[in-house]
Image (cartoon, rainbow, N blue to C red; front, side, top):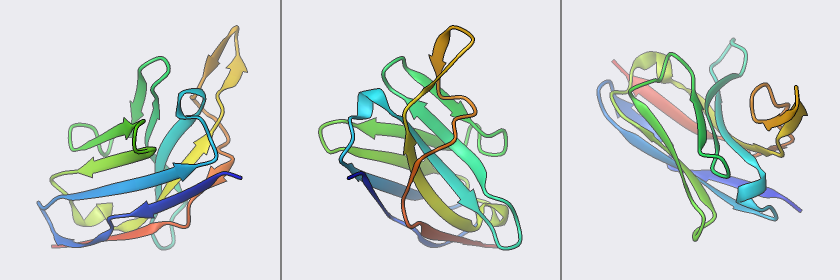
Length: 128
């Protein structure tokens, strides 16, 4: 059974930093796309960052490029999201997600994957 547990959320002032961590069990990191998503009140859930270490592939939302970094620690079974230069618009519930890659156009990819496994989320609040 796959379980994802997020930690590290909290409140911070604009310009500050937070580090989110997702501890995963029941899956093999190398065979899964691992991602962070967020959902603000009244808005749709959106991708923040996705990582597939098997091929060294990473994707970031334009809104977080240069400020957020996703990384994976296979020894600890964690996927972290380092968030720097936080803005009030980063305020949201952040979710960790995992899924196997999909086969499209002749190769496996983590792009546009319908993520199957989700954590319960951790709240990030950035004040101005």
